Amino acid sequence: MRGIDHLNLRAPAELIERLRSFYIDLIGLRDGPRPTFRSGSRGYWLYAGDSPVMHLTISDDGDAQPRSTGWLSHYAFECSDLAATRARLDAAKVRYETDVVDAIGQIQLFLLDPAGVEVELNFRLSE
Image (cartoon, rainbow, N blue to C red):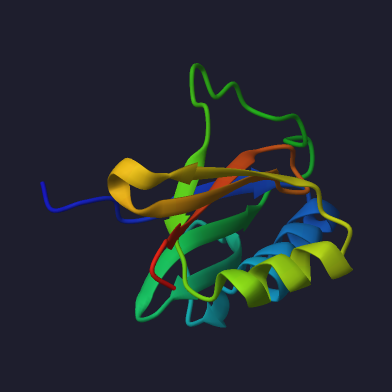
């Protein structure tokens, strides 16, 4: 195994549009190329650098209920520019909790995305 390839959020179109805006405007991911699938799947691929780390899939009509995530707690992104990120979150009135982890040299922000999924943003203390 080489690492995590991507996360996929599947939801109705209206929620996908809100998630897309959230992850681009506030978290700092960017829209990127998404292949056409034979299944007719629709949505977006959001990139961190050259990697499509977040897939947003529009659910089919009749498939509008959230799926069980079991024991999934959250997912995390390695980030840069803590001050700019905080400014974007504050301007959008997104609540977050902060934790400083000296042992690993990190500042962590914990928040909820528009789908209610917990997201952890990690910044190096030396920033």
